[in-house]
Image 1 (cartoon, rainbow, N blue to C red):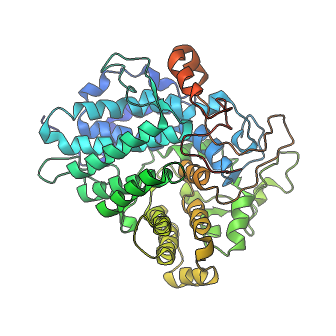
Image 2: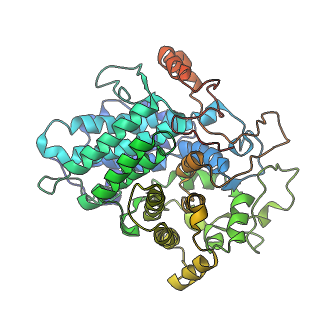
Image 3: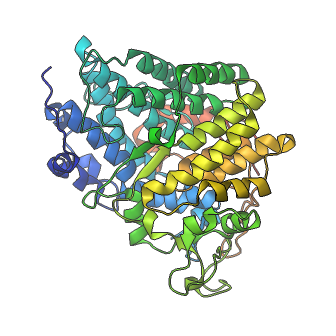
Length: 498
């Protein structure tokens, strides 16, 4: 197939304007109005960019799934707003909130990426287009299955291709097995002898070496995610990932870039609902350890003054101090053109440190941990944030040295800090490890108080009427005694997180 190459990101995003209008509506349902066959007239390049930007750029999904729930669950954000406006922080479960990721991803990027994988699988010369599409597909489903558990996977997004509008829910265990195999295939299939995406590739500009590192780094994350449920498989895949070659610097980070026209969905959500503040849990954690990121992550805007986190259990009537005295997210994180980090070198180093402790990979855990702290602080340069020099970071580490006796906890705690802004990942790794040891919120303003930090998104209500046989089969596979709600757990979550 003769593929047109688009080399200018801004020109291409302008050409794709009609696609992103569908994600601008707060109800999140406009994607359903897209002609399902429209992707057939898009070039591979245009379709990949569409998927990449919509994966990080959906207002509805980032507002309700990321800011209102995931960030609040793991106590990076807090708010004095009511349970209807900030349900995640107060453990209120509203289906029109928990379904946000599902109802934007499935009719949007899932449909597009499945179509792109299908279209690029026909001709041998399209091998790079296909391999990269498969990696992005794993990135998308990795998030979906970690949030919901068993989800439509093998039959998802094929309403046009196979005329299947009632997809089965695959088990999370089988989804993980297939995603790992897909990454293994894609990494080995990438070749400089065939054409690929170029300027239209929002992550790496068509750099196949970086795509290969991304595939193996994502494999490392998926392998590590299974650490508590299948150690043999986890160790095998972690070993494959490290042997294949993972990130070696912050230049390898998987970053979604944005412009002010079709901006970062988290930023658009934050600007529309700027009542989020840094949680007292996070601010106190950073202050107690003299972590230099306390000023890098937030600022007291109106009143000025030292960093101050908001309690997690308050509403407007119980807020101890005026709203303007609490730290908000720094402006650099909330601009329309702010980037989004999906997976970073710092995360990879922390996973390598954990792998070394578990005997799944080489290296000295202390050295890898120290390198991770340096990388995790320096990664924020891409936001235009001034970062401390190496001497300052070394002094911080000297005051809080790696302790082998508590190695796994220290690594998990650092992961919790490092994945700031990528709160889906923060939530997932916390559920896997149980660190840091968060105290569940007890909110006295309502009745939905379980004392348990949410561990899963419940399925959309509409699935029970649209696809009853398959969703009921998935619900029947939940662990003994669990219901389709906040307090049920996904397959790999066997740790006692509460």
